[in-house]
Length: 128
Image 1 (cartoon, one colour):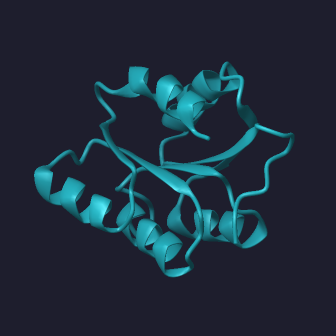
Image 2 (cartoon, helix red, strand yellow):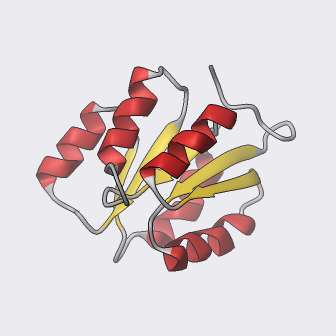
């Protein structure tokens, strides 16, 4: 199963974070990116699973610390379901151990929430 874009070249982006402030900040950033056609969000693991049951995004931006299960568990679910989603981990849990785990599970990017927000537009814009 692959993401279904709204318009040709436009991407569906899912943001999963338990902080409404982070979701709002990302929504503002993503709304200014030309190739973003639709923004989905979830504040917990279960909300994210419900979203994925309804629609498969092209790109997912995941936090590691979530209410309920972790973002790593969500990344594992994406891999196990063989969903074709480019995953960006955006977290305060920046450690080599977490980065290795996330990359092994298929995360394309591993970003530090406290200093890497400026990389998001380029990453999303370059998504094919």
